Length: 113
Image (tube, rainbow, N blue to C red; front, top):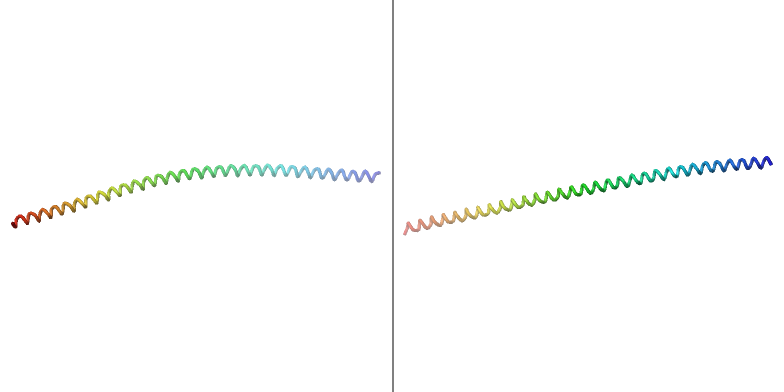
């Protein structure tokens, strides 16, 4: 009978140790789940922050691109206007020179007659 009590006591003690180990594992598992949840929330937060930053940078780039294109268009317009003006001045000078030469030729021709 004492041996049976001793065996049952030992078995009860093993069950209590198993219960302690199971409780410890449960606590560790809960802590792990909480840390995992915290890490996942941190990742989500960082991803949202990164996406916002990317959106801001894209808008800034698009704005800079639009400003550059406006400046380029203004430069090209001014350049075209300057070239047109230079061409007109060149044609005017050529026309004027030809007129002067023609007038001189006509004057010399009239004098010889």
